[in-house]
Image 1 (cartoon, one colour):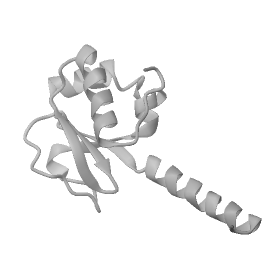
Image 2 (cartoon, helix red, strand yellow; image 1 turned 90 degrees about the vertical axis):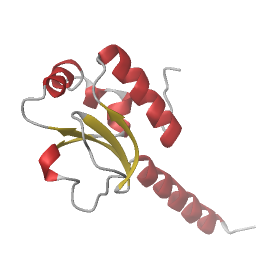
Image 3 (tube, helix red, strand yellow; image 1 turned 180 degrees about the vertical axis):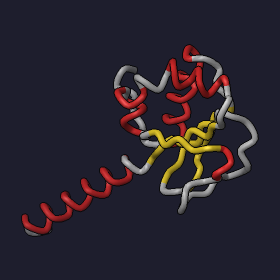
Image 4 (spheres, helix red, strand yellow; image 1 turned 180 degrees about the horizontal axis):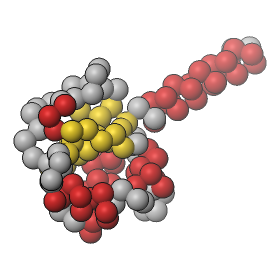
Length: 125
């Protein structure tokens, strides 16, 4: 059996590792000027996004289509449509939603993407 101090250190290390992995996800919204669907998302979803469980789990980073992926990040394939929502984990794409189908469809699609590709747990379910 490990001494108490070793068990405490091990527990703290495990907690830190879990916390850092839980915060590794982010959502990149690839957009471009003049995109009607991007503007609709910004009007309908963006104001509430950072206050939701999904938004806290995967903070939003907006990115112009012509700027490419952020430094240190890689998309799995080229972005052809705006908006495209790219779910990233530690700089790698792990999922995406192409287009904006309206708020009634966006939330369930995004919620399921998070559940399928990350450790996200929806407390409302």
